[in-house]
Image (tube, rainbow, N blue to C red):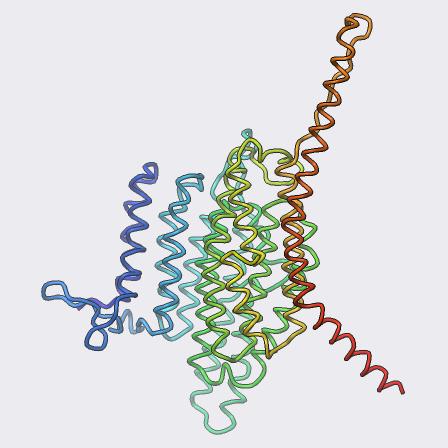
Length: 505
């Protein structure tokens, strides 16, 4: 009998070896990685027979819920973990083939497979303190993926040590919080009555600190911006979908399995505070970003804020909304990272000023960035809108002010994206050398003036098209904001003025 938990951990590790040996041959490396992800998804998605048996091969049975005991610790595929693992391996299986078009370094596929194994163990293992150990292993692998050497400006190489150090430091600082929470819970198990709840209160605080560090739920001094700026773009997309998805579903499993963790208002209050900070920070700064990497980081910060906003709710719809948000992130950040990696690979930079007019040379890059960016802001007609719509429905009876801040953050992100796309599709200024009037023939003067007028007309036409593109991106988001939120905003303002009048009267 083979437990599925064993295959989830062992198969990616075994596939990482030939992927590492064949790292220069993408035609063999990518099918190995995608085949392993597809096989595990098939194991998890097939209907069960006789309780837990997935299917039989000869005299062997592969069982879904069979426990796997390693050093006295139990790993088991639970119902909620089953769908989380499907989403995680589907994200990896869709991101791995994108590395064929854009070079992400030799570490992306083999270390990505090893990271999938560690994250799978983090979701399956119990007691939960060992999940933090598995996340630490995954963070060590991710640090090597982040700081892979990449060519910049075709002249020098840079190692992204800041993003790797921030990411690894955040996960390492979360580990003592989980260890301390496990110790407090162990001590509380020996108590009874009201003393148990009082003893478990510090554990709740430690776990909230640990998960805040893992999710990057801090507006400043977190790993989101350094990783998005320095790491290969597909590595950032991998972390935003696979890693953040695993941590989010681990937090959801905590809320589902432990009554003391979800009881009271501490979890909801902490999640609301974190969501307000992340969404507010995104709303204030996303519009002013000057590079596509920082736009991606701002979008990722807003995504973390949306997840925390959903965690602040206690209904079942929030779980579905979180799953849809995570699934939509695969297409949004995958396409955006593909376009960004093409630009970095060709020009070595991703700031708006250096990429003015670069979209004319590489039409596929702005197309991928535009499609992924529109999905990031949740524009209707994109996959990102489905997750945002479910999030809005889940918050219908909750904090309306926090929902309004999330819409403002999306509008701010749309403005930053429009600025980048306008620069990418703009026409760079052309300097015309002054002609030598003494040696130039008289007939060349009218021709030179006509050429100058033609260049001026082309420049004006290109700028008009760029501004039209900006309006096409920003106008739908602004119109959605005013049509959907203006009545609520006016009603909230009127209610506040009425309360102030009643108080001071």
